[in-house]
Image (tube, rainbow, N blue to C red; front, top):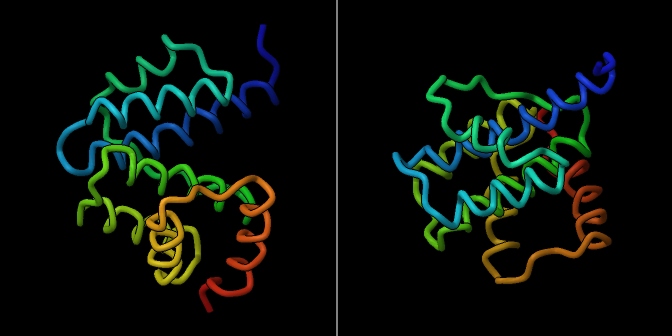
Length: 144
């Protein structure tokens, strides 16, 4: 039997992956490298392969899930930007998806360019660097 809070956390993890899957499918197809990244992130969150496969197979239109706080929003954006770069091609549809997402997160759209530029330099921020970048983003990109 799964408890209420365990169910809530499982829903949070699945919603996080659904957002990433929506992005991965934004250009009309799911690239094998995008699929690998989805499995890697799902594994990081403790989801089973069958749960991830079920989410990937679903053809339901996913509503975007909006995390509750700045840290969760930024962690979602981290994974989203990783997904943008997963297949080595940054598509306009992926950038549009990111812009829509940050609008719903309550950030200025400049955060997308800022993050794209950070990741485009080829270096993925370490955990301590990401923590600092999250602080910077909180002061720089909150929508008025």
